[in-house]
Length: 265
Image (tube, rainbow, N blue to C red):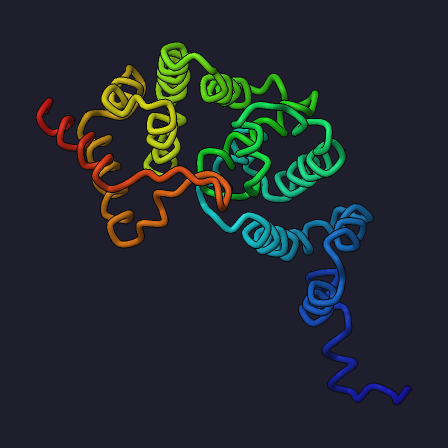
């Protein structure tokens, strides 16, 4: 190979205030895999300090590409008990392995809900995607007893319940627990509405969430009004479940709940 010029030697020489020059750091970040960069990080505290910003950016990009929907990312953080994107990527890969390794066995069940979960991506934005994430996490011993997993498994139990009266009662109890723990927000309130629609209990839906620790009447009204506005612009947002077997939540369903809430103010 040809010799480097003086300027090139200067560019790739070690700086006085660090181990790796910016040009070398940039080259490592561009051409090496995350796994290789992690190994370099582990080789020395000084290298770790210099590579950390690049690794954080790399992991953020990988995380947002792997799970592109904000509410799904937030749900992963809750059920996997971490907000570190590197940890989340690792734990999500664990769920992927569980899904791939046991799908023939785990989904070989007669329940309609199991079929609905099997038909959606675990990175999706609807109720059944959230339940699928939860179910997969419950199959991992280190995750199964985490509070968010336990809470959401109660939701799954309510949705799977065959008795319609019991299903409504169990869903109300499960979502009231989530709301009181602060786990229902504007970003995921649509899961609660979809659950109420699925168990045919929209008339009592507001009571599920208006509990101590949950949203106020004004907050819940604003969240649902925003959801209604989004669904009015894009009706497909009301669909939940796999393609070809979807349920349809419509704007009129949301508006009915909103009107009831406004009258109660």
